[in-house]
Image 1: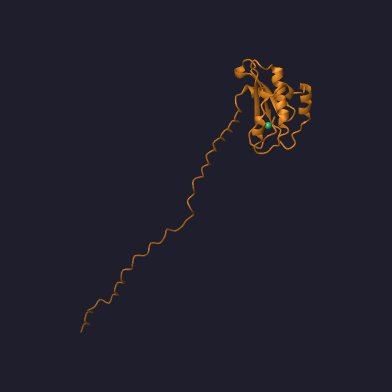
Image 2 (image 1 turned 90 degrees about the vertical axis):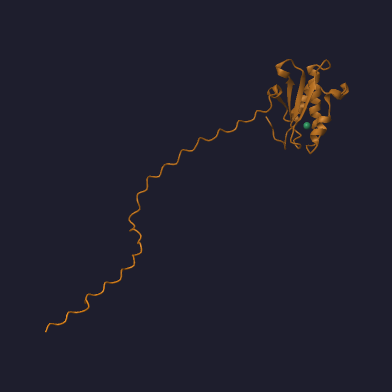
Length: 175
Ligand SMILES: [Zn+2]
């Protein structure tokens, strides 16, 4: 007698389909060579320094000359024309952050020599005014036009000597 044929295929059942493998990250090789770093663009040239503001356009300032260490003097020629006045700048009264500047018009009344004498007296009068708030106003109240002849007893050379004897101790010398 022949053995009966097996009813069941003895072959092992096929294993269930494996779950799809989780995606594995690609093997990390050496990082791709980066392109050479581009050189930074050249810096723009530095902006030119702002030009120093030119102080005023006054001819007077260009003609200013020191008188001693505390004052500057200048003849005034408007528009470069004939002399019309004489002016002085006082360097003593800095407390108000602005300078005393006195100008005396010559007109028909004063010669240049007389205007200079009066302006010099105005300067020397200012020495007696302490440099403190309001000192500029005080000094500017002094009016060389209204001096009487007896108010200006000193001659030029005497006033020049006094101006030269003055020293700016606590004030910057602006020249
Ligand atoms: Zn002054």
